[in-house]
Length: 297
Ligand code: ADP
Ligand code: MG
Image 1: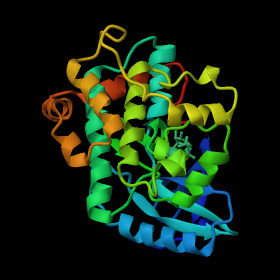
Image 2: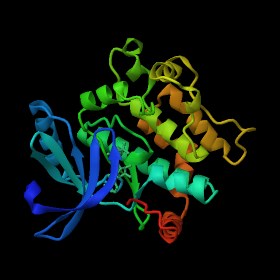
Image 3: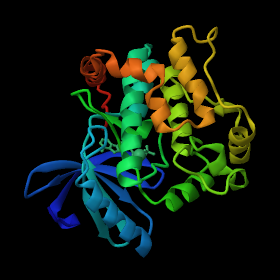
Image 4: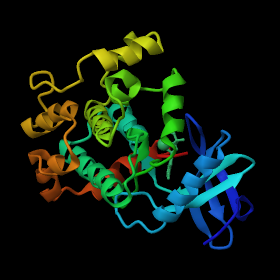
């Protein structure tokens, strides 16, 4: 359905990112609750056009691992992206599991997250020819039913890259070839594979896999990604992980194609495993509720 900003009632802020805030809102006529991301920069005309096209395409996607999209609204030069509201995002989820529960996300759950994200990325690429460009824990969302869905794709790459390059607080999930353009004439789909690897490692370790405290400026931070070795798991340092999981993460710096990752033993095992994602996610979210820590505020 078509609607404008006036049709929505604001129910409060959910979170804040590099380019604006995300609010819970209700579409009055239908009673639909949604998450509305407001990009508070002047979206230029070309970006507006891109976003409207994306909104039209996204309304008809049917991939269980992609967030449902209700549309894009433009208001006073800002862009509002209206999407399905989920119960939590993986950044908040893992920080709670490791930091508060003093527990770990089981490898079988990491497997389901990897399968879901790969599934979403390869669907975006093969069906819509969209590169995500911003794969990271906060862009992988969860709900109590155990669904795992990717969000925040297709927002102008130019916008994301320029914000990421100038924002000190932004952690570099970006592949080296995106930070240093001399490393590659253009980046392609496989830069997302790098970010997926960094993301999986962060979820597995409970912390960002680069030693950020040693980074006192953006230049050092970015040059470590470009010059340094790709972070990886080591058998002796990380005994809880299977050889298959360690091997998957070792493949990432080689930028395998999705079809090759899909047949990696770790992914194949995870696809077939009878893991009860719903029970696990529900139990963690229930503990968050108990402690008054919202999955999302
Ligand atoms: P970032 O992804 O960089 O954290 P965003 O502005 O994209 O910044 O999102 C801010 C926060 O809002 C996210 O960390 C996430 O927890 C939450 N969020 C975003 N989209 C949704 C959604 N559709 N449902 C629930 N929570 C969301
Ligand atoms: Mg996001």
